[in-house]
Length: 215
Ligand code: TMP
Image 1 (cartoon, helix red, strand yellow):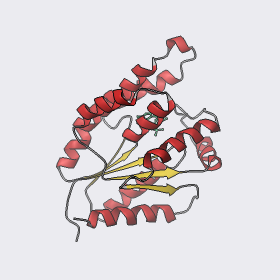
Image 2 (cartoon, helix red, strand yellow):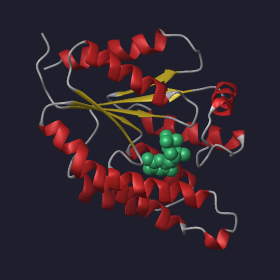
Image 3 (cartoon, helix red, strand yellow):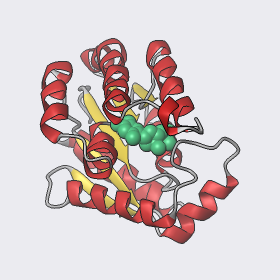
């Protein structure tokens, strides 16, 4: 028997790795097994955080560099969106002993802003220590993908995102950052998501079930 308990699951990985797809699959599978589950995403997840998301993503498409946000403004916007999201959606759901599945969380900030844009990690860690108040994922899935598969998936997308036009070297660098973050960490699972079959969905559900059974 599973005991009802707060449980926070995060999916991370580069664009086109299939994390949004897999988080939806896990959400459906948990619901099928009668777990009270919430599926959400970052940046965004609440009305106000989605407004900030639009601001961030819109800025990316600006042609002239001088019209764009400074990289610290951009980082603060991700963190502002996270603050809204954590306080008004994630924590209240966990308090109700729900399972929360989030498509991207703090490791995306470390991968893109710290490793990618060279933003000070101390700056981000300090803000996180205030806005998260000890909140940590119980389980993180990092999905790894070949550049061929991610490219194929991105080409199929109707709406283009912030990094969808970046060269393959950018994805490789971002993916390596995620792998570095996950290496040797407890409660992290690096899974290959290059294939388009349902074996990954099953693996993710099996790992999650094992964790949920733990006391
Ligand atoms: P998405 O494609 O998963 O919806 O994410 C939107 C973009 O935001 C994606 O290109 C990664 C980026 N991102 C960051 O740069 N830092 C962050 O902290 C988060 C959550 C997302």
